Length: 108
Length: 310
Image (cartoon, rainbow over all chains, first blue to last red):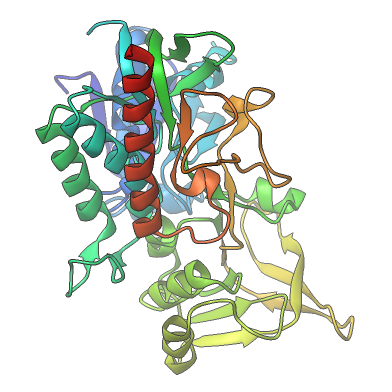
């Protein structure tokens, strides 16, 4: 996680997201999803801006069907903000860094 | 990066990148602001079979990567990010991006078009939870499930055919009794055993927002008035596109559908501002026509700059 982006999985989700000490922004993505790749710079820039305030990580929907199903993600990119183990907010579809900030700032 | 540019191109689909290629070769060192959806609508497609020069077809994202590479080879400079505002009221024009303002002697607008939605409240609520406008992004989530595609044009047929890879059954819901799609796409769709059709049919509602997932579509036959429920877990909306022109409201002439109006080639209502591709094309909307109009815009911008200097 040299770039400050964590990798979430079905295995670590409970510990690293739901029981995390601060809000966590999870980017649901896949290799084959063009818009997901287009959103990467926005996610990275956001992570840089919110170091120490919001944990940022990615969850590959191909490899992690359980969490993908659990949160009823049926389209990517989807970005979900978790706070105290619950969904605080989410955005579906490709958005820029400002849209991420606006969503997250409402919950900090 | 100098803050005053000869040519700034907004958008990076086939129109924007062809404009970039031509203006780069004219030594105008164009700046291309890629926009959020860098590469444009072709980034969401699979095989493109009607772009000349590729007899075996080419994948949309590969075609866009090649166009971008070709523009950059001649000195086109691309930047990521989005334009949040433009001021076309005085020259040089000002373009506000996420990373600050840029001034431009000419602007080539190639912002393209975005998928249109049905406009139902339930559709909005279920976006990403069964409602989608991108088959290549979201088809994966519907393996072995029944789904519907709304629309009757080429994109609807392309999505329906693509989605048969995943879905158990694809029902095309179309409000007329004939398709608008090209003959070759129609033939492919009719021949596909997994694709069924609901003709003369409109979507009244998407169920079930309460559950947070799509469970069915409520349909209404617009000839008989009969209603019925179509159980599906996914809905792909492919009913056309709307031009991305909100940045230019009250600054440039638009037609009643919001498309930029061009005259004498690619000229908009403001001298020095040119438009190409789907943002000004309600009729053809092809990769090749977008690219062709991008070439026109670059030549028009070049001549405009030349004229200014003399």
